[in-house]
Image 1: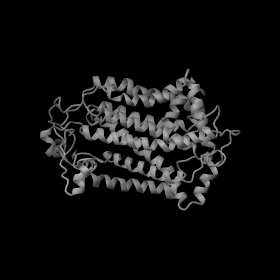
Image 2: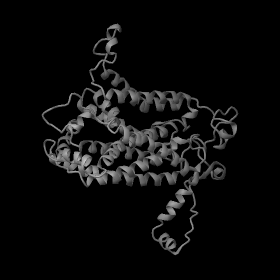
Image 3: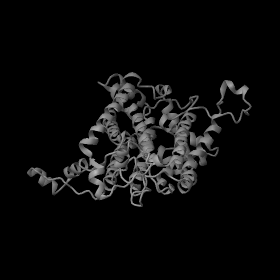
Length: 442
């Protein structure tokens, strides 16, 4: 599908004039007519959902920036003023705050889909790498935005995270001073964070264009995980519009209903109550935690006793995603046909949830709690810290050990020769399917 020829024909004089100078209409028309595998399921709708989330975040963020004051003496009050005095300010603010959570829900599901179906394999490595870059920029943008309300959790979250940069040898201290604008978190820090938080969403939008460009060139993956040769495109693909625009539209409506439930009925469910207390450098909260979507990486950070080692582990947990296409040694893309790897994948998802849960707990809190006296476990071992360390080990082992070894040793199921074959046979179980040819394998 990377060699899809343009079928757009300019009709009016304006279209012809524009097409010879800036063929943006041609690009949109070609994208709408792009041959798309006809077996894509609803896991492939999160790309459109993510695009919508980005538009919502940028639009609401621009409006909020008109009223926000990036000053330590006035930031908290300006947020309260937005909520109380600006027409529709509470709706805009809650949409923006919950939009970040919806954004991360969609991106985690989008990435897990890509991991399950092997969407990172050749020739789609750059699609995956640019996607990982977008994910990293999202985390940075979300952290910067979390500081802006200047509540207790905002201030102390910034204190904890920026201090980690100082643990980097040689360059850590100068970078920390530059980021904060001084030796401590103050007005200069808030101004820097506001400026970067406003800028990065537009950088993300640029990366999304690169992501779509790479996708347009390499073509869509599919649940079966096979490449579609030219002579099969007519039978195994359909135009993106109207088939998948309608499907994406239906999924977006369902997603917006979930979004609306949080915005209108429980707008603070995903936030922290301490952030409604003005920042006070002299009063440390009982438990400093980031937003829920950063909790797995925060747990990995705390799992390592050494401060610098924790920073390396936390950034390594994101960095390992960038080299994923070269860690997976299997010739088969989709885990539909890799039962052994599918089991490890399910465990990986559970481990991610465990890391998120552990990140929200005190490190030395007992795991077993009231049942501790009935179970012969030493008190030092019965804590979230050790559970976090075990989950962290599996997280890295999944990418660095399990994925390479299983890919070499497992025997996958037979792969259909075409996309249409599983549909016509009534399911994915290909009892009589021949092994896939090199052209159809990953």
